[in-house]
Image (tube, rainbow, N blue to C red; front, side, top):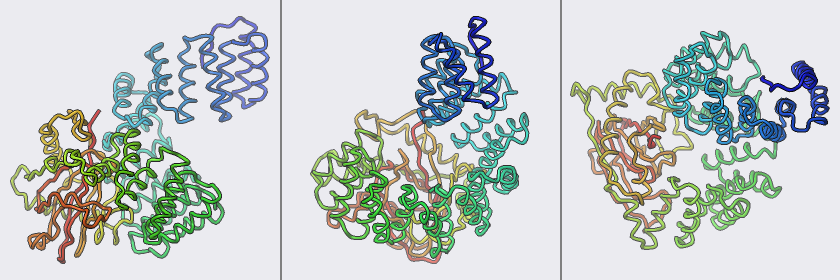
Length: 604
């Protein structure tokens, strides 16, 4: 660290305090620094050293206060601004941290650590492009900066540029061989690009080097699942749970694996075992209740949550989860009471606002639903679920804006043809490649498809030779579609029109005899789409397997309406606003139906 130029006596005392801190004698170092501050209360170096000691103890709020006092006494301290940013990041205050790092760089543009930390803050703020823009010039100018390469890899991974991310991690490891976290990140990048066989030995090496790290076992489970080693994947997830028994995400991954591969009898066992010793853990309670509700065991979910809510566990989140379980159990009035209880705890709780509004629409009380929808959209005007509910409420109240919001003209279709013109051959090869990725035996619980399977992770990030050309054709069609959209600054879909876009998720669905999609929306997108790869002959018989728009997932009976139906064909791409309700009509045929679906967001 850097120090200012204090007079000799204070300088010697500061050096002694620093030596004590470096030796781990934090109490002695603190006592020495406080002695200095007795005579010089605003001595900037003593204040920043005390801040660093507080941060080492995990006392981030006092650390921030001490760094700010040091800066008040001496503003031109880029290293203290960097330390301030680190403590702010420790508290999850990434925007404030980015501001501190930016101030440090304004004082010293060559301060590489601050630039790397700024990039990390940008990634945490879900702006990996800005992180990339910070780091690319740095690694070009100083390619010996191993940390810069590693964080560049994180940014590229977040941008779904997995191949480049792997190259960046390799550059970091060339400079610092054997760095376990970077080896782990490299393995994750390789797996996400479809190179699980390359990732596996790296993950096994990492697990041997860091046997107590749950994240490594967790990603090892993902990797083994990709390789079709289902029992080994389950064992890896269980090992991760042994290391981090309260990590709800690991339990969910194990539950999904077991459910989709024919073990519904044990898919919730890990949750129950963890709750036996952590009965009041809100995340585990919410996770188990959600999986129970999705699996058709909503009464059990309600019975699980009600005592915890009565003990005031979990705040608005568990009250909302209880409402969902009660609704699925057929106790509609009690469900709405639970949603209102969640909102009494947190008036802006997103899920409770949406779920209560949805309930009121089903109760045919759209006027009562509208204020809740408006409150949610005031907090997030891009909330696709709230926009979908707003369209329903407007239609049910006779508001003409319903047709403006849900205009079927916003749906576009394109027939995509490969460069060689062999559309049938192209889609046959694509269907075969996608088929190898459909390893599950049952539909995912959390999805709306029934009678089929869905691939995991980001399909377009996989390095399969059959994926790249269809992704390129789709991207070209999306650009044409966006360019043709009209301008309307008041429209919540059209006002997001931008010069470029980014894929925010992509996957494949394969449906079998009787398979279909329930009516749903895509909450994570702006524009959503489906590309038809393979279809059974039954699609030509009546409207079997056709895509429908307008009918909601609320089961409104006579109040429902279908605004458009589209007959699929191989090579057809359909693009639509993500908040548009859509589903499919079941088909009866022994042949399968394969599609690619994806979401996109406007680019920065």
